[in-house]
Image 1 (cartoon, rainbow, N blue to C red):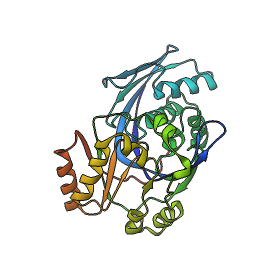
Image 2 (cartoon, rainbow, N blue to C red):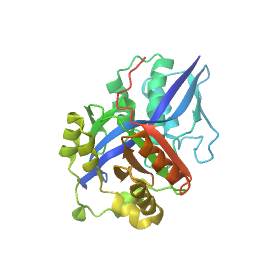
Image 3 (tube, rainbow, N blue to C red):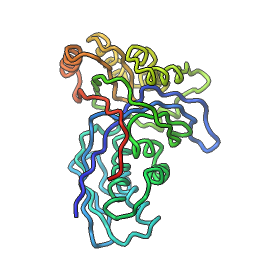
Image 4 (tube, rainbow, N blue to C red):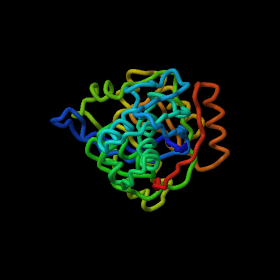
Length: 289
């Protein structure tokens, strides 16, 4: 038995850090939404008690370091599953890009194995399990649009944002999220207005959504990687309505309402950057089959 599962990327429309917690994590307020750029996972049921990862991307580990492997292992241990799975990952989301590619793969494995192993778990239970694997996994289990608080695992569903184009550009570098957070000086943060962003989404106002994007990690990443700052400037120059770095970077995205402007931004960046994508915001949550 085989099952195909999509694992969409996410972008942060807003990312704020409130303080550092006693457990070493940071208290965050993030507004995240899924976009139509996705890895594709093929899960094959195995009678043997094994977990096998297959990926043709040399940057994707095929062992217990892979979050997809960890997701399968957690389910297997927690529910004493005696069968196994082979997980084939077709990687379309750039690696170490601030787009939650690894977390989304893990979330897709949780949703897929819930069906393949006939566990009959609710999506809320899967999200709770996801929090054990990584801070973004809970959101990725649900998908759609949400306010994420705590260390990112407390999820409050939001409506879909106004429909628009998203152009993403990733330079040929990887960024360590842990390193960026380590360098962040919480006392000097200029906080984005999370409430205004939430209100703009409820109002369906593309204009105010664009005005209220913000990411407190940008300043740290931009100070370390000039390529990211250059991409931001190019996106603004080509006419994106709003430009922001996603997560800890290095991917930068621009929002556009109109096809003509999307084409101008996309084509302009293709001559400037290796990995460029033009996609839509998905906006709606996953459902369990």
